[in-house]
Length: 255
Length: 199
Image (cartoon, rainbow over all chains, first blue to last red; front, top):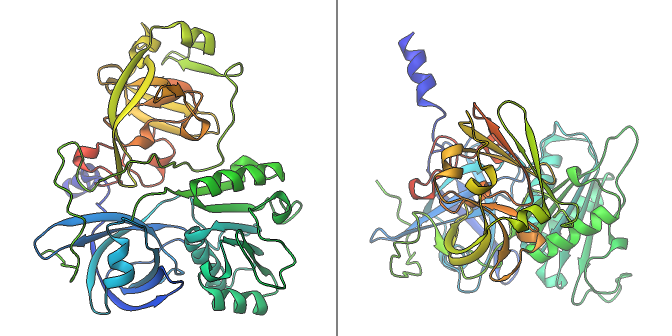
């Protein structure tokens, strides 16, 4: 009995720091890089969650930041996509310096609210601005990995086509899955044959919530604060109930 | 045995005793919340205070404004790792709001417009520094930062400082709030890096 008592008093275990080795990196844009890590002991995650990353220099100085996971759940491996932040501390290293074989520490997964699993069968609306697309890509990838039939509408908002992450993958998913719709919207300048003029996200860019047997649309919005505020307000204006809108905001500083 | 990230040097600002472990300094004021920002008119605003015996009092915006408020300067620490130094606020101490009501309460569950909740020991609200604030940097508190009024408990991570506060539920027993039910620490002391459950 004593062991049980001890276990109860000890409470939940601390989320451990894990050693992660960079397997490969690829540039998504001129300033953003996807990094695939081998992480022994990583048990998988829910799409939308993030990790805390710790970098330590040779003389023992260390710094931490949080990054969204870009990949679908997998044990022993995960992918981050990191955007360089000007005057940032960790992001310039992760994007420009870190090489395959280099290591860092991470712990997680963190975050129980902004997440999606295949248990959720309602239609999914993903609205991402800039690097806010990262945790939404994890949701799309998890939806495809699990074979869920939840319809997905993914709205990616970027300054120009050169600023869109995962371009080829988004195109091929859009083409090959009838119940996945990907819209790429540009705020500054788009492609010559775009039907939509470049400009900020507006009410007409967003669908109303689904109704009926499929359940209320689950909306996930991620991006810089101004984008998230505006997109969430537009969704409310479109009739989405506030309780069905999950938001995650990137501050202007960080990384 | 520490894991070294080869080639990482860092920004190397001199250590600042005002910045808790694992945090970094920001000059901006990032915004974090789980859903859309509620828009609440002060004419509609009310703060419900519920005691352990179920008795309730409601405080209107006018009543809040009539209470003695104070301007103060504190450092704030978000669990997402940013720390902002020297932030200036105006608000009413929670101790003043609770007056004589904190009978047998050991804990409080804070409620917000939009359904957010967070839990704290009562001592952190009435003995430590804790306010319901309605001004930031000399101006009315913006909705994105929790306006018209939010809780501010600067000695704990900022998720405890509930935005859009509309209720203080006094309790004999602790009950986890929104983030505390989703893997975050029950108490959240930044100086002990109590970010997540088990820290």
